[in-house]
Image (cartoon, rainbow, N blue to C red; front, side, top):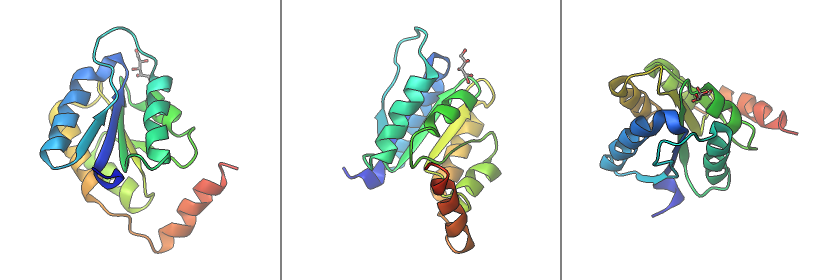
Amino acid sequence: MTAGNRIVLSSDHSAIALRQAIAAHVEAQGWAAVDIGPTTPESTSYPEQGAAAARLVASGDCRFGIVLCGTGQGIMMAANKVKGIRCGVCADTFSARMIRQHNDANMLAIGARVVAEGLALDIVDAFLAAPFDGGRHVARVAMIGALEG
Ligand code: RB5
């Protein structure tokens, strides 16, 4: 198993079932799902779960991260506080494709109370299938990194 085929999955308590469905979905495609939970429904803090996933991506241990909370927004905000992370929250496949092609996103956030499972799996597929376009986008992505200080 290499970092190149590892996807870390994380959520808070509101998104356990969808996270597990996504883990099974990506495993069926040949990815290695690194599911860091939670597995029980007690209240869990999305900032901790988002940061833990983001650190595995930023360190190079995992190629991508997929994080979920009720809206996707809180866990996306937490993930983006980790240096080197570019995480977008998506509720449509167009955005999921574009955050890879233009923004070289390395993490995807989804709101489990916003998006039903079928669309969520399509969003994941769009994200994973799209390459970074490079070219004119390289300098702009570097500008995002420069903002990290
Ligand atoms: C938890 O109730 C909820 O606040 C959380 O899942 C998320 O939506 C926060 O952004």
